[in-house]
Image (cartoon, rainbow, N blue to C red; front, top):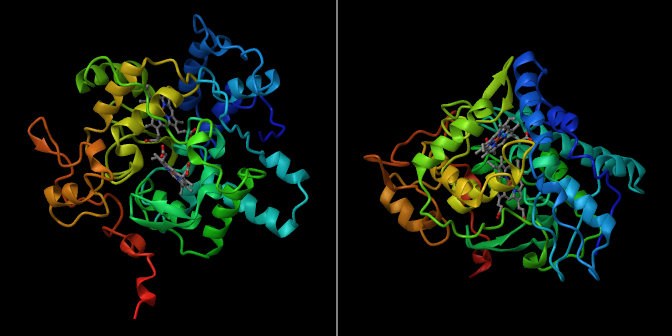
Length: 379
Ligand code: HEC
Ligand code: HEC
């Protein structure tokens, strides 16, 4: 078990979360008011889920660690015996670490790119996202796809593209789909900085730690819903609990040109190839992370219904698009689209049946179909 000092109250503290949400924006009256309302609701939640689970007796995990995890991911499942728990180091820990000053500078740059990826807007990013929009708490939080696992399981084979991927290539994947963009070149200063930040978060974790034993990795699949997920029910929850920040039309909110609340659909959101366009992934993200400051307060059913509603809205084209929606869906059905509504008819229109690439002036970055199977070496 890997342990690092971390302030348990770090993520729980509404002031911190508010600061985090508006990190790249000037705090203004509207945003502050919305956040204040959201967090007041949180503070007075009845039967607060945070206090529920206690550390099981004779556990491999001590009470202090359990308290720490509850602070990071209030209401989330606690680790099961045999799971590998890692609390990633913070940027404050970095200052104390025995690393070369140049490496620290690189890691700080990676952290800055991760939380404010909008600085690469128009070059590598063509939507309103930051990496931290989905990998919350600076990519450190369990159940918010913390990014450290990638640094210790890669290189490895990835079914999504059918070859052995490096850490840089995994990061490139999120640039291509989640950021609807084009990754910084492999080996470039920005790519190296991002990779270094991921590796810093993985400090002390054994390499090739089996992925399926890692506590809080990814957006783990929720139990199947009782009722078939329904977009109409999803819309009702959306209007009651999400629209205040993400807008009724899903376009999010900006203040003075800065993104305060990221869009959930439309041209400035993630594209049809993004991992979160899969229903089970979005349902899990929502359950464990939203509404902001009130994670794990929705029911599983509400989370599935919300995913059904949000992911049946339009968004930029999948960069793997061949020009034919049915063909593209069929090509990636098994490895991906059987979990999305891409190419599916909803309310009389086939989702994804368009050539809109959003703000991005091209469909697909060069690297996407690059094989890595040693074929170049064959006679
Ligand atoms: C729109 C949401 C979204 C954004 C924005 C996003 N990602 Fe991701 N990311 C995901 C999803 C979904 C996964 C897959 C999680 C799973 O498998 O459950 C993922 C996985 C990853 C992983 C692999 C984690 C692991 O467990 O192996 C890394 C590394 C990563 N992202 C880095 C980034 C970086 C760097 C950025 C910014 C350039 C970024 N992501 C932006 C949604 C996003
Ligand atoms: C108090 C404001 C607030 C509320 C309410 C809220 N969100 Fe969010 N949401 C955010 C912020 C801010 C982020 C980006 C994360 C960050 O910067 O920490 C985010 C990120 C997201 C993302 C990932 C990024 C993206 O744009 O796709 C999704 C999906 C999402 N929220 C869905 C929801 C859903 C569904 C609800 C309602 C159950 C909801 N949110 C309620 C503020 C809010």
